[in-house]
Length: 129
Image (cartoon, rainbow, N blue to C red):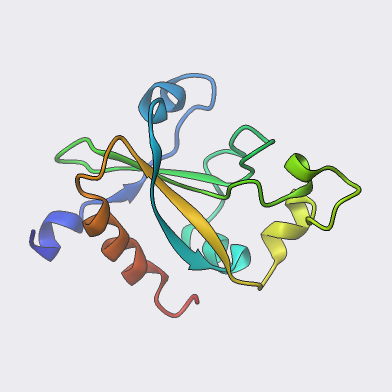
């Protein structure tokens, strides 16, 4: 697919209680990307939601304007929200400030378009790693 085709991707803010839940319902892990939480937030702005504030505390959702395919980027069991205060995991607030690279999940409704989305995302994150 041409670069022009993917240029239309935009971060799409979803209503946590409404549209977002139906758009990302049924997505699952398809790939990962490694970047520090602080740099991810710096590149993409504030997350669309805090996920379920248990297994996920950072959640971005993207939808391709032409195909309607939905992709989300999220942390997975990375903070004390999941591990509890007694463990070594940082609080969600401290995790967001961390410069330590971590693996973020890329979710989708299947593998179609994931490779292209990851390439588009990686270009957006260049200089942020």
